[in-house]
Image 1 (cartoon, rainbow, N blue to C red):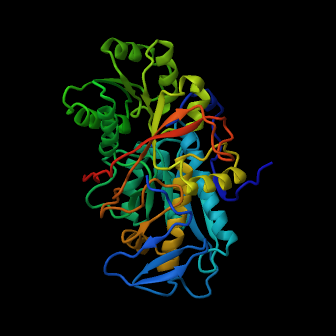
Image 2: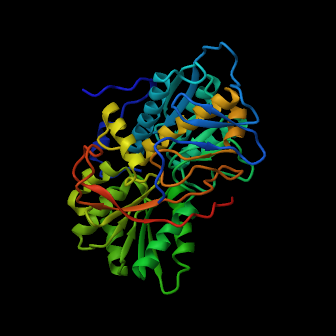
Length: 438
């Protein structure tokens, strides 16, 4: 029996019906220990954190928390533990738990333990608003874990008003951030207009002239549709045909036949997160044996459903670099501490969120507004990431470089994949993406 990570959890059950869903829902080698860099114009006082790394405190060289305080520091995890995006949320939750447990085992932050409170947004915007308000009013200094774009759109407005940091993981709608956003931070999936760029890079590299896409009819899907039509539709000699399906759709036969008639040489499933695995299987069954790009989906969920149909065909983008030593070292700890068979990039992001919040609290104390201000002046080299973490003034990823990988038969590196022998094989590291300006 694996050691179970500890936290206070609200609504953590995953609906049994999700077992039937084939797919969920979005280099430079990283150092094993994350570091931060002081923003220009600040005084960088190096402070050793509980995790054994250093943090540059903006304008201070002493801990900013109240001397002698032993009150736990509450961090909220608001994510999807039920509903369409549960596979992403479970990974995120367990990554945050690993980060909290490691820091607490090392003595906490300035002698104070971290208290992770987990809430389920149920992949529903209204529920997300209810839960995030409860977390903030309950004293959370920061909240991480947003997967659904609909939830992100609803909750970001509230956290901006209540001046509490919110970390988006896979909520990529470009409408979430505004030029005035100061408390909302992307951590893994860039805004949809940025996601289309690497796909266009792949299309050009492979000489593809006809691109088919299936998108889900909600905020993320529609944003991807617009981005694809702009990026790929603007490539000389390249045509794109898009099909729109409901979010809960499982039978994509009709949509795929339309793409087959079009003559698609690539199927982009990036805009339909829950359908990635089903689209991969059903396209091959129809004889449409072409590459399929996923939606920053959870690898074991897709591979468990698509199996051999995915090998050599299914490719996806991630903010994690599965080829790096830093990722593999972290993944071994994650698998030993949780019931997950694989550490997806959502878990890598969750671990990173806790790391960054802990550094901020150590530097400036537990005031949420000060935490957000401090974070904006930092750059983090987080373990397992394919790029350094930093933001624009409005919270968009400043230096995003997603890694594009294809499903290979493996074998996987020892100790990092309990879900099978398959493993993501690196195709390309995207060029640095220009931050989207809302």
